[in-house]
Amino acid sequence: MAVETLDILACINYLRTHESILDKKNIAQTYAALGNNVQSSTYYPKDAAQILLGDDAAAIPQEDGSHLLLAAEGIITQFLENDPWFAGYSAVMVNISDICAMGGLPVAITDTLYAYNANDSEAIWQGMVAASKAYGVPIVGGHTCYHSKHKALSVSILGKATGQLLNSFDAKPGEAILLAMDLNGTYYKNYPFWNASTTTSPDILQKNAKLPYTIANNKWSSVAKDVSMGGIIGTLLMLLNTSKKGADIHLEQLTKPNAVSWEKWLSSFPSYGYVFTCANKHIEDIQSLFIKHNIQCDCIGQIVEKEGLFINYNKQHLKF
Image 1 (cartoon, rainbow, N blue to C red):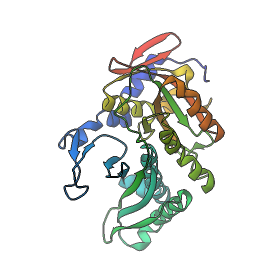
Image 2 (image 1 turned 60 degrees about the vertical axis):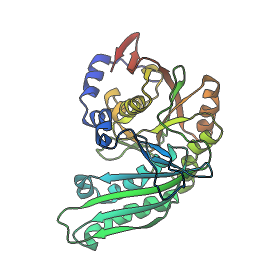
Image 3 (image 1 turned 45 degrees about the vertical axis):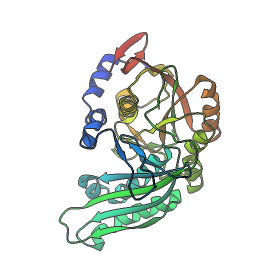
Image 4 (image 1 turned 120 degrees about the vertical axis):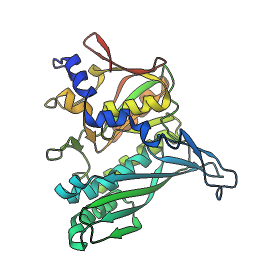
């Protein structure tokens, strides 16, 4: 565990104004026009079911008890211009994480791509195809528009959860909070992205992607979110928003690379990172599974009834 001296108040003040964390904290505003839930299609299944909004992927109940999972990600133009290969790779990778965070397995991907011409989009395509092959998830179609002055990319993914669903609505007071992250990597260029993906073999990537599915189907947890933009803090804030609960976390219990500051680590986006909540009796089950796959899994705190994110460090207890 990291033990270096930390000015916790300065760290929290920095994170409170971090753009990506603010975006995650206020993410509910993006779907406010729809409300907190919608009814599934009146065409299928026969009896329209409720679909909760605000999770990593939409979970659409099926008549056999399974769930279709649908998610999408958009990539900003600046990223596409500055690093087109990695932007394409990331668009596929983050969609797969969203499906896995629901206790599902990815099925297929589609994309919508705007560029000036085919040559202008070649590196983006190469990145998407590289990620598709690495994770074993096919790109099955989409839409391409040329003669566009600016590049734009969105990627959608279909997945399926055949057993227990993981969601971000059901965290319960007293449950442990586990943070699983693949630390076998390094930062990608100057991005706040911890890369343990492009340097890892497809076999390992695909085996690791199935671990949340295993956890869900063993019923060790019913709650998870993937750590995305906004990092650990932003992800926890989203989980607490949908669950309407609080969290008490301890930084001393959280592993991070020694050379990385707390401010950077807590706001970084890892290629493989998940937050789970679980009953205390299942902490060892989940940790043992990740340890077998060389993935760090820390118990960093617990869910509490009082809403808010409470951070503990060196006997200091502060609300985020």
